[in-house]
Each structure stands twice: as structure tokens, then as C-alpha cells.
Image 1 (tube, rainbow, N blue to C red):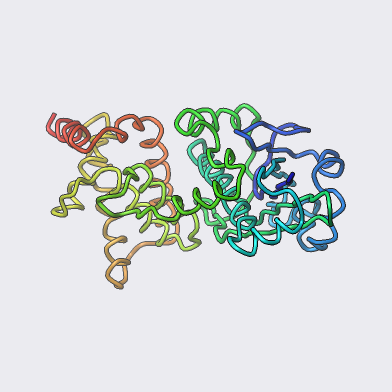
Image 2: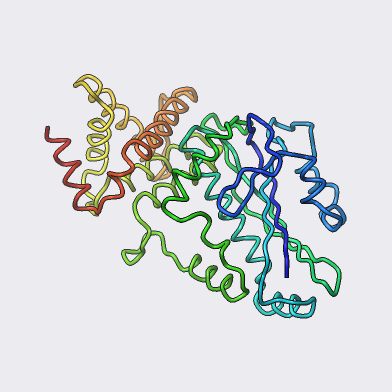
Length: 343
């Protein structure tokens, strides 16, 4: 049975019109209203979504400068469903249609998160809709929503412009090479969708048995920080992201170890290294106060923002310029960092 998926994107501004959309794996990203009207949002959508959800696709009021009318869409087919009865039965047994929307949204989110590696932004996708078209009955629409709504480093939500090249390059550089495009979109049967969902939800982020590496753990904390609209909590999660990248299993002298490693990774001269070291020590005083339910003193809001900006830029630098280093196994990484600090 054929289906059509669509999800609006907030906070993204593309520098030129793209009608049928940029091809990102099996998904398409477009900002064309004419194509949206003609080929994507056909008859069932406006009736089922209602005026409120349709605003996300058509509203030009630019509320908070985030409604820029971009959307992802995908046309696919579930090969083992042939009619309305089978659709209702399979959905009732497994909820596969809702799971399909959720997985598509999560993969969109995965891509949009990678745009942060290019520049700070508050881009997000929240709601996704899939419409099935049985030949023997009325169309049916299913919906899923994510909770993540991001804020930029200034704790604001505003549109950020990307070029067509930047958007395509982010996919090619950060996703397609490692993951061969959006893997789960290849799932075209009910069983394959359910199986992928179980594998996705069985991952334990901090277990020693997990296959998730330190880069993925750091990215998790980065997203926690981007979800926060309190600057001090942004700092808390950013520090956790840096620790995920730089710390071994040792728990001793964490503040000193991380500060020293950051100083040597960023600083080129002795004075620069001392500056970066002291900066991290100041950041840890904020982090420690938050972690232990205490308070910090003599720090203005502007100063906290400056610390947050430093962490944001540092993590972006580490995850781009040093990404190959952090993908090494722990022994190699620890050896490199130890030698770097002893030079």
C-alpha cells in the first residue's frame, strides 16, 4: 500500500527555492509552496490536520522568526499491506503506522542535529504525518510528535540560513558515508518496521555492553543542552559532553584532567593554554554548584553566556577538527591525549 509522509521544519531558511526538494537519503527537503499544494498535501491532509497544524506549512506571519515554511516529505510503500482491512488489523496489532512516523521523524531529527556542527541554530522538526492510500477505501492519516524544541546559544529561537550546498554537504559528510543514508527508510514491511523499532529502543547509552561510542554520548548531552533555555543548565550538559569525549573510565581529578586536555587541544602558546585552563576551571565551578544543588556567586548573566558560547564553540571544534581522534578506541585516544599533555 502506498503512503505519503510529510513533516514541517522550523527555524531553517534555505537561501534559494528548491521545488521538488533536496534529496537527503530517501527523504526530500523542500521550501516550495506550489509543490506542497500540488503533490504533497492532497485532499485528506487539510481536512484531518485542521487549521492549526496547516499553519505550520503555510503561515507567513513569521512568528518569533521561526516559521519559514520548509518541510520534509517522502513517498513510500508497505509491500505486505494490500487493503483497508489489513491496514486496520496491522495497526491494531502493532501500531506500525505510528511507529513509522516516529522513526521517520527521528531520522529527520538526526539530520537536523548535524547542522549544529556547521553553525549554531535552533532548527527542529516536531510533528510528522503519514497518509495511507488503500484502493478499497478512504485514506487514513497517522501522526507522531517529538518533544525536542531547540534554543540557540543565546537561548533564542530564530531562523538561520543555510545554503543548498551546506545542507547537502551536511548529509554527505556526517550521515551518508557512515550510515548509507537513512537506514530505516529501507524498511518496507510491517515486520521490518517493528524490528527496527525494537533495536532502536533497546540501546542503553551508558552500559559497558552498549555499542554507542563516546561521540554519540557527547552528541546526546549536546542535544540536552540545546533543549535547555536556562544558560547555567546549558553549561551543565555541555560539560558532560566534553567529559564524554575526553575522559577515560577514571573518575579521579576530573576537573583538572579535562581542563588540562582542553588547554592543550585548543591552546597554541603557553599563555593561551593557561587562559583555556582557567576558563574550564571557572566553568567547573558553575557545573559543580548545579550538580550539588548549591549556588554560584559573582557571575553575571553575560558572563555565563560567554562561558556557554565558549563551550558551544569548543565542542563544535572538537567534533569537526578532531572527529577522527575521538573515533579511535579508548587506549589510542588516552595515549594521544597523555602524550599531548606531557609535551
